[in-house]
Image 1: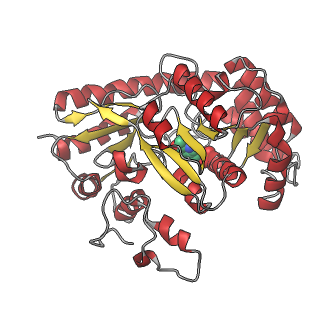
Image 2 (image 1 turned 90 degrees about the horizontal axis):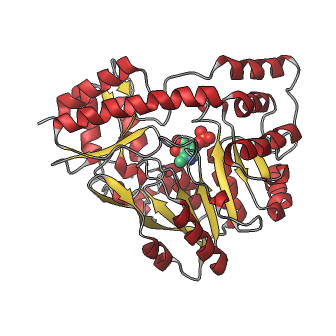
Length: 407
Ligand SMILES: Cc1ncc(COP(=O)(O)O)c(C=O)c1O
């Protein structure tokens, strides 16, 4: 369905199985359903225009630091261009295990580490591993659309449980989450720290959810991609803090955000030891193995990337202050500074449609941001801006935004 279709509305992120979606009937109908993506439509609206400034995507403008890139180049030169083990190089899996020991204080064996060709790929693997057609998956939204699509591609049913906004801050009602669970619920997907809201779950809530899931035999799929991007603390709470080794828990992670490596396509997951052999098969028959040379860059990032990460976080904190000082001056922006992540997620008083606002920002100010309606029901009306860019770019973006939204 195209967005100028009168049937479209901002809450149709999880598009119903509607015949009007069938533009490619010779392919699986689910592909027509996932085709609908308001964020991609906004990008299309901006494409081809001159002078566009985009803070709509989930990445900063700093390229991968040299010490990481060099390790990848050295690996290529050293002939690391062959197939490798499906779950990642043994050295990489050990390095991941060491990283969890050094940064998180966990004792997790390398056998639980699975190196994947991105965090996104890890989520697809997790869904393939736990979900069958017609299972139900509870997604705590707002949630990045690609994660919602991983559920849809399994032809499982998505049930959204929404974070609620109050005065610009977001929270989760645990009772609402538990009430949503039915006998066909197979998994709960949670992304904390959360893209796009910046909300972060505390350890007590994680413990309560893990206990509930354990009792019901439900999987928890925890996307912790922004776990190192919490302000004022070295790392955010993790479900691994509260889980037993054999709990039905898969933790998704990525090199993309921490070490400015979005283009390397590398992530990982932590799985229960018992699942290792089956995940091995899944990978073997899906993509065979992750790329070899990037793993050498990844190991550098894990071993020596703390200083880079700290300097990035120091800038994000300043950038966050710049953004929220401006918002306070304008007086019509509803949002509170995020506890984590590099996103400002806000609504403008009196602006009903985030999609129309994002189009106007492009038309009137050449600024491309992401519409909240791409992230689930409760996110309609909000706009996401990634502030992980240089100061001049950020100030330019804020100037453009002000021109359109300040009354
Ligand atoms: C919550 C969340 N999970 C996963 C990813 C994807 O990470 P990767 O680049 O490793 O695919 C993103 C990217 O924006 C994200 O926001």
